[in-house]
View 1 (cartoon, rainbow, N blue to C red):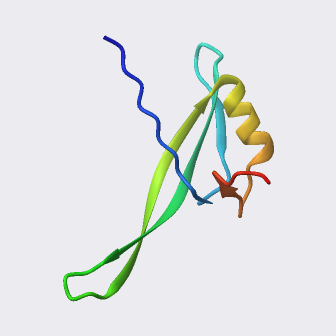
View 2: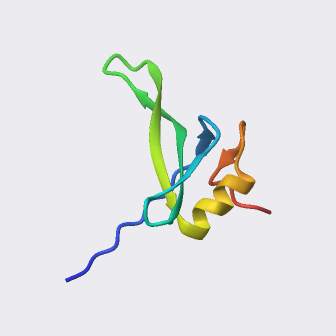
Length: 80
């Protein structure tokens, strides 16, 4: 049985996308998204941690990322 996992990340681009081609000629873009996470410690203090997620976008999506993403882009924001 096939399954599909969906993840939504809201954060900032950590670096400009790096693009390259595989030996077979497929294009891809690699970039990181920094996501802030806030939690309460055992003593009730508010703590903030930044998690970095490495993203790989293949083919046409990778080309779109290369064209439109640059520092300091906000990733995952819905347009109004």
